[in-house]
Length: 353
Image (cartoon, rainbow, N blue to C red; front, top):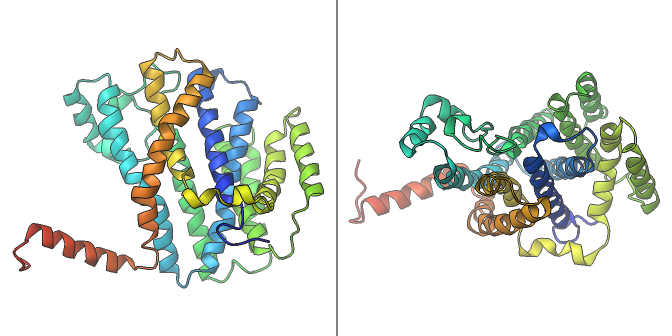
């Protein structure tokens, strides 16, 4: 099994999943969630892509825990991967897209933005009514994609707690967590909002598959059988359950398949996170500006064309530089920036107290 960064297809897989999610959101934001029937094929494919992202996250985060010396370093690495990219995203959303697209006077927009309610709604805000954003669109959310961020962070915490206590390697602990999540999910199965708990199952199954990676063979025949089961399940009410059963194995089969062309995708950069966090507000802005007049394929293509450059800049200007600090402690980073700030404020040389 290939484990090196450019000896597997994880980067290509995440980029493909992020692209599929962009296309799925172009459809759902244009049509409106309320108008989409249960079992819509575009939404099912989009959910499968998100499930694949959670599987890869569970697999790779568990691997990261095992290759990290301390819990503090693990938390620092996770912080560097998630948070720095969110800062410019929030700035672009609230100080570029927001003022241009708001239906409020600018004074009213910024008064609402800097109110206590506005501050508490950042960055995981959804409904843009308070800011006068996207109220005439079929969907009024500002960046609903961000709901997955706190869920991911919570699952990182689960991995860290289980790792520190030694439970991560205990037989039955991760399967027990999977069973517990299943018991929580079952009563909410038919509720599209609460049913999102299933994505934590994808993460936990990904973690389990990493922990047992030396015992699991990724076979094309098994993958083909699971793919057939998944396809046939779309004709039944149990497609989401089939997804939880089939998608983890299919994801990791695809990630480890010996395809040289795919294994080299990440050499140019990992643009999946940037695409995921930036596309939603851009799509909402385009829908508002065009009064939802664009055909879905045109909106999807335009969304990708607008999002990829921002993802490219996010990776090269923010994410890659942040990740370069993984071996530097948080305290050292703070001290270095403090010295730089003092040098800029007091170029004469002395540090003023």
